Length: 409
Image (cartoon, rainbow, N blue to C red; front, side, top):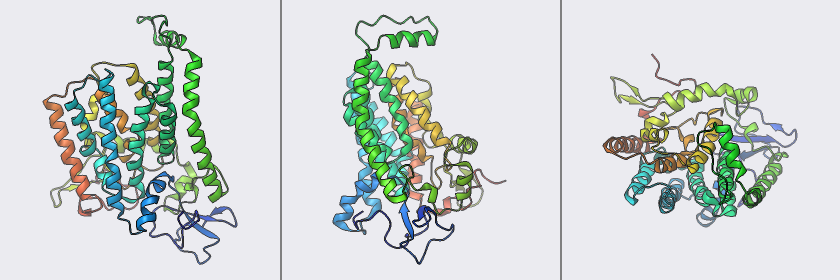
């Protein structure tokens, strides 16, 4: 961008998920090659969504391409926990959570140092930078979208998040439910608690003032449509197709499976579910005694306290809205062609992890000694990941094929 063009200058630095486009044929470049003499015909592009680059652009313009990547993103990463604390405080001040300030700080510390956010925050590089940018955007979206406080700002936050982690677009469901809830008339008839849920839903919807709800949704949608138009222009300018991000043209060894099954497919669900829910550390009697799969550890292994979100002490309309947004995003990630490879823990969980922490706060389950032990475990495990990932490879499996999911016999 700073050079006045959308493709890379020269060949890509390394072989890490670059897209190569043949401008003459409009097709992908010959697979398995990372250098072409005709650089005007075979152009290299960054296939990842562009908003993190926009965040980084001013710093690069000022300091050049020698900007310390890891340090920059570590500074930006501080926004995520900070804004999460603001969100939890908002829930407390509106009477939703019933948590104390100390409990909010505990949850914030758990997110910062006891979740996969910790190892992601100190990595730099394009895979992890996207999560560092997406997390504060998700929290801002929740902060502005709850009670439909700032629909335009909520739309801007989610639109930018879409240009960072596209699967987060489904989080829009949260705003839709909140818009309906906020638009219910004060004198709406009561809901029959003894009725079946379809009846209760019809009664609930009958109390909605649809004009108010549609107005909020329109204000929320306007900036998202603008962001979407910018994304379509950017895609069309690069690949002559407004709906092509560049993943079709990736120069990666598993391009064949993408051509066969696509980027998202039920075909990937079983493998990803296994990694999401059952990937454990590999133990051995020989040094270094612990090995981590390149697919990473299961989400509950890195942050077991999240399991409390499944057993809340009470349920509220805001919690229902959070679950309605969270589950589709999680399922979409579980049907993606990639498990998150290469990682310490299941990093795709960051697309909805702020919602899980909000649910922990709203569920009012007591944080007793057991939770304290889980917190200590989480911080220790994720500190190990933050200090060793991409720094001490002796602790990580070296299989390059993506075919080794669990410890071999």
